[in-house]
Length: 333
Image 1 (tube, rainbow, N blue to C red):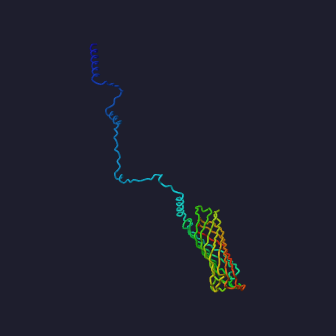
Image 2 (cartoon, rainbow, N blue to C red):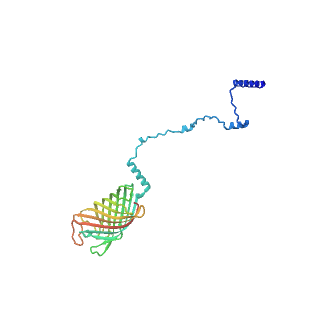
Image 3 (cartoon, rainbow, N blue to C red):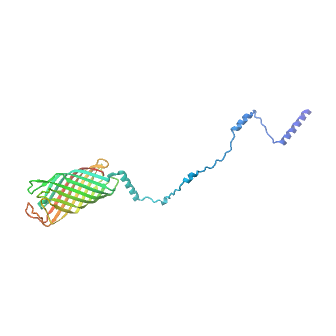
């Protein structure tokens, strides 16, 4: 018993000394023990490396040197586009893209009839024949252009003597040149007006050896107006008018020197109506009916007696009516 008691005292003394010399440690038994190698592998698996700070990125010097300052104007300082600028830009784009009717060419055969009535036989005649006309227009812009045309009868004849026994060949020729303008409208199906100034030169050519017929020439400047109606299913109506308030009229010598009077006043007007039928986007067929009326009022007496009445008339008047029916083809608007 004493030995057991002595052993307990020694054990208690050692336990108290251990508490004074070191921190208390509670050891719990887990029932299993791990080897040192297993403990090292577990410690390596969950080891967290400390984060290292990343160095700040530095921009290369050559990139900084290549940088250029760009001045950007604020929106308030940029002038807004006006309606005029927009319209001009649209017209330029149309000129470049549509190329369209910058050039127009018309060729038309037709039937021609002329009737000249007067109180002086030398100025009385009538003729009918085929005809041919060529018309060209060049638009320097969508609103302004140039125009020229040529019309000639083919194989016309008139009586060559008062007895109407013989006939002589004659030629009726018109040449026109002018300036024209229009109000441009990109919508080509709507109505359009074309107007301008036109110089006209008409020549009546008789043989130089004719004893009863003289040559004639009428020229002057007039105003021109054309209306192309609204397109309906590919076709449209055309109305034209030409007015020459004051023109020059002259009788040209052949085998006979004829003067119907000392002075003459001449004016004329031309009316036209027709239709166009679109074939392709820019080309079309057309027909046209034109009527021209020219009036010559002479003052004074004629220099040659009338072969019908054997009298020398005073105050000769001449009314010349011309009718033309054409069927043709046009390239361009």
